[in-house]
Length: 153
Image (cartoon, rainbow, N blue to C red; front, side, top):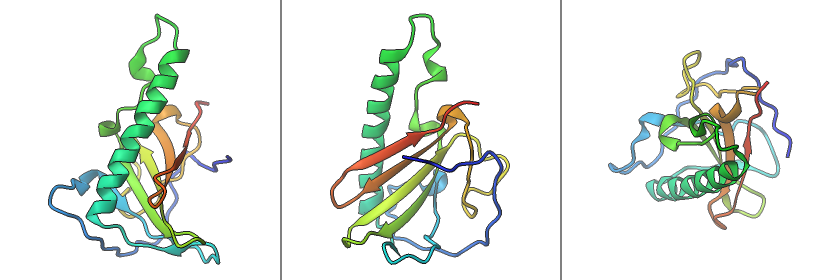
């Protein structure tokens, strides 16, 4: 998979977006960024509180899988904190779509540094950054996911 990500924030027009967020969902670290491209293969979608809960479950599975794999590669003296993903340390941007099969998917961009951009309104695009920036794409119909963690320059 090829990810095009840049360290410099990009400016894009703010778009109002609403979704059904139940009272138990902490949306202070989540931004819903609407799908803006014209495509015959994807259409914009809405997220419900049930979707948000399912996304959290799948993200936890991703982080657990990633951390187990990363631990297997570390040398005994390596500082684990520099390599492992703890989801509570990340802001998230969700872009929900309906794919060509009619299934709801969501691309999730997670970032530990949002100081240079309003992550609630502007898509964050980065290059490198290591574990500070990663993307997970989830198919909510099948519960499958794919991911990409940025490299370090």
